[in-house]
Length: 141
Image (cartoon, rainbow, N blue to C red; front, side, top):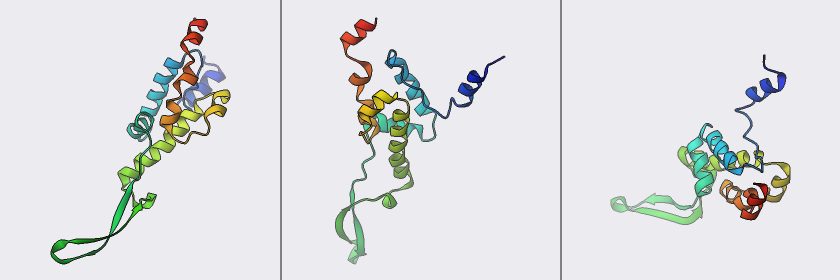
């Protein structure tokens, strides 16, 4: 018969990302990737981690249509969330979700060092901090 802590772990296995164990960074990387892929919009979450956040970019509004189908365009401006297509909104939201997943999977002593990062790729790229140097790895072994 399972004990209460095993029941709690099973019940929350999909709601909490895997926590980093500093002695096994490679395993955590694999588990966090599997966790992200299993989430809604998982492909875009992984893109945010690997490629960086979605860039909204700029565009020009169409002011009027001229003769022979020529368009009269307004000034160039930065796109805002309401300008995005549903697919672009999914990509934009995925970076927020990816950032939250990574930060929730870190112990408090590491979180306080990198909580100022605002996108998942930057957090993921702090591998030296999380993995430790080669000398630290050799010392642990």
